[in-house]
Picture (cartoon, rainbow, N blue to C red):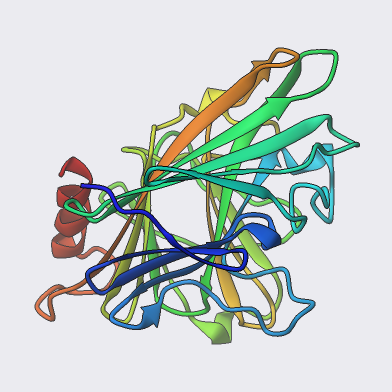
Length: 284
């Protein structure tokens, strides 16, 4: 069963049971709320100028645009339309990249799953290689984990964010005392998911597993970033780096789950119970 969002200005809100999922079309189609029983798993904006909050989407690799992201894609406003229970958003075209972004959101209320289809549209006159990149910011703290794929974790320009790898699963337990500068880690994933726990709240993002050989140059399927101010963690996932013909669109689907954990589930690196919960959710 699907549900349609309510509309308040530029904010579109899906509500099912005690779960709320909201998107703001005026802020790059950013996911601004994913809450359960009143607790939002996503990081909030610190002020009106802050752009590092909620969940957004960029073209990868970052080396194609450096920093900040192309304004037309983030934080520029997106146009919005509703068709049944599906919310469709579209950006303006990035003048620098010749790319536009589309986002479609729908909710399966029975399964408690948010399905997001991202599109990268080539508005240029030549083929362009690009990968999809979802950047989800959560409050600093908690436990982030994913199954490791090929190779070992690597670093980029920032300090290396250290992972604990146990039985093929990578775990990052946030410890503010060990984060004195920006830290990031790049890794190939396995099974097609990444999860984050904040208190008793579990966020899972599921997607098609991408081989390490299909990652964008200088990027990886899984990336985790922590800022030096201890205000947020970026829980990031990327799809395959593909060539998109002029006028064509490359699409990529991510499914989101949010659940309250039973108090009996151990929330610590290596927790078999926690892994069973995540894998059970994804298999449905």
